[in-house]
Image 1: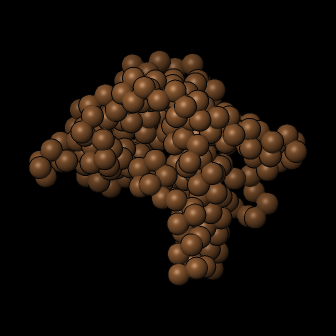
Image 2: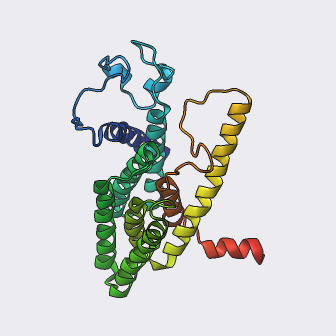
Length: 272
């Protein structure tokens, strides 16, 4: 059993390596099938420098040619994708089609999260991809259970989640939230369904508040100790533009994978 998880994890890191290419080259006009190279000196990477995770550690995060630092996000994306693939296997391995849909879904979500952190924008084609997976997810559920009401309520959940974020975008004229977040919330709401869409939205704000405060604390300590951080943290200040997609995705995963319910948490905190 352990060997299966290891195999799935290794496969996930390989996919994560490809996702790094997509994240770096998306909307740059560059082909995805070009040779990988150092972004500083242009050195073409050999096969020994392309092993996911291990190459980064063996190279100590530096290019062999010019010794420029390799962005740590490459390592993080590979490890994160491997872990997510193992998690999807653990939860959905009983249904191969559902497993495949969720593997594709988390791959898209990794790209969206990292791209949003780097550029504070969610490309429409990625949201459309998540939308296709959401419709396939709901359609497959209907084929299995023949429950029209549940399918309709899932669509209502998506419209509600997307409409909520679209309302925030409209009222704030884009200052509070981006329209891309609304486009992403719609398919994610469809996947979790009517009963969990509210939990997903609330958890995304909770996670956002906690992680943003932690990031501010880390930056404060780094500045106080005069330590340079090479990895990306956000926000830089309380007034900085905050990429919300990672928080929304974390809220979604907590509900979709771990079945976290905001009402259960509230009851445990205040009525236990």
